[in-house]
Amino acid sequence: MTVTHDLPTDATDELPWPSPRVLVLGLGNPLLGDDGAGLRILEGVLEAGPWPANVRLVDGGTWGMSLLPDIIDAERLLVLDAVRTGRRPGEVVRGEDDAVPRWYSRPVSPHQVDLREVLWAAELLETIPSPLVVVGIEPESTDDLHVGLTPAVEAAIGTAVAEGVRVLRELAED
Image (cartoon, rainbow, N blue to C red):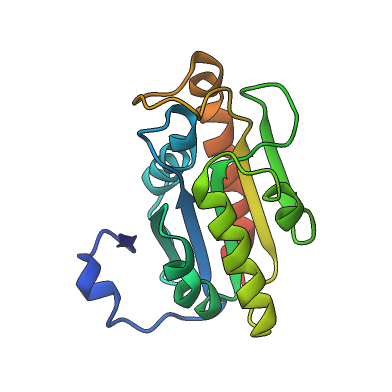
């Protein structure tokens, strides 16, 4: 699902994407507990809009390699996700450029292996967006099938949304 200025998805595909093209990619699976944090952050960032025409917000779910066309079309990329970095559950984390693939070497869930591969493919095609920023939350539970975030991750959503909005404002500027 691509959302731009509250237009229907099919209408956004026909609109030109002005430069600098900023892709905001929310990732995760809400059926795996804290793995759904990225999608919750995306909802909050979307609600903080409206965003300029050069910003596209995409629910990337667990789409993996099918995200490659969106990523290679972007000039700047913001990923919102649950990210396992070894910190306390619920801690908001931010990483840029070279730190990002390293974070995704310790997958929280199956989609992270796919994202690492998508970023690798974009790099091979010499089309990886720069800057590449991840704003995420350290998850507590992503192994069990259940809907809803743990209390520590739920408590961090507001902070992660605020950081995502701050980063997006910077990336959306010329």
